[in-house]
Image 1: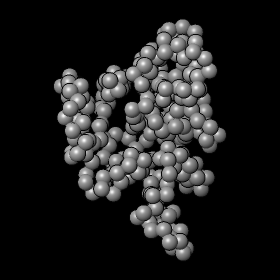
Image 2 (image 1 turned 135 degrees about the horizontal axis):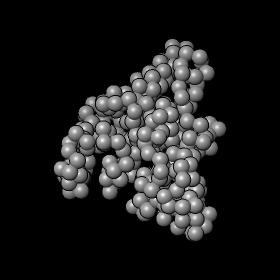
Image 3 (image 1 turned 90 degrees about the horizontal axis):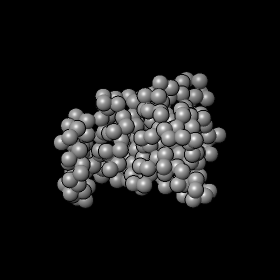
Image 4 (image 1 turned 60 degrees about the vertical axis):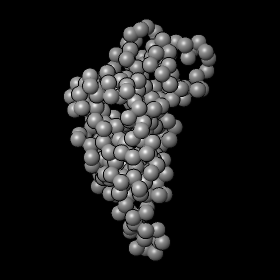
Length: 247
């Protein structure tokens, strides 16, 4: 259902890539998912692609958080504009906005609203990013860790990623730091951009009409919005974004 939700709300020229491992529970899950197999039959393997993570990568980084800042993941992508999504997010089909609306902003990173970094960047659960920019951040951070080692630090360059923490904060924090050096130019989402992009937590604006007017309600929703103040507000948002009921 999640993949169908995404494939129905992205341009026809875009594809969905599902990363998995061809052994163990990951492969069994793919084999048992007749829904995924049917979607591939309907849309074609060029639009829904299954990509096997190489054993050399998965053996080193088994957690998703660590995979998200592995160079191979980003280098394997066929395009520079990337929509990152997972099992805790949906796209609201009633939104008058579409992915093209946000692509026109040409941002290097856009996520759901958060309070970190003065609202810049955003939560990465459902986010729009530039592949090449993510690779620049990885290279910058790895080089930085290496230089610290040269100054007497014990941390090895190859293992520096183990301390990078939450991947969305890692990317935004380092992009902001790289911009401050004056050597890099990144377009990082402002608070207003993130509010148009997604609902999250207690932020779930209810439109005055369905379909809503542009800017009245976000394009997506991240999480089950557990902190929405009243049942009425939740019900109004669910009328606008019934896809949220999937979660």
